[in-house]
Image (tube, rainbow, N blue to C red; front, side, top):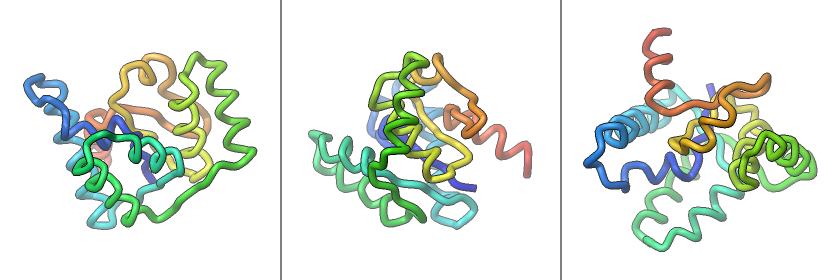
Amino acid sequence: MRMYLDNCCFNRPFDDQSSLSIRLETEAKLAIQEKIKSGHLSLGWSYILDFENKANPFLERQIEIQRWKELADSFVNETEEILIKMNELTALSLKPLDALHIACAISLQCQYFLTVDKGILKRVTQSSEITIMNPVNFIIEWESLQ
């Protein structure tokens, strides 16, 4: 099963952990990373993840997140099909960069797009091509299947 984690998800462990919901999302994200490292899940990566990560003003975070690219089993650069899908997704009121991440995940044939971005989760959670969810909900679903 291939996952795509957006930049917000990768950055969650670096956020202020004083909120319970942020701590839960962090723990779920770290558990998902362990499943990727152990080979139980695979990771998709895109050029837009590279782009956003390079814009991170915190070099240590940038380096740590970039290491995950090495564990990805697939990578996608921009294509015409991705841009077309992005335009379809922006019609659902998604921001262009968010839509671009989801379009890349679909192009990579990921089954899940994980995000902690409340804006994305309010606008779209299910499509015929990919399931979009919070990492906490993914872990709950994963554990129910085991």
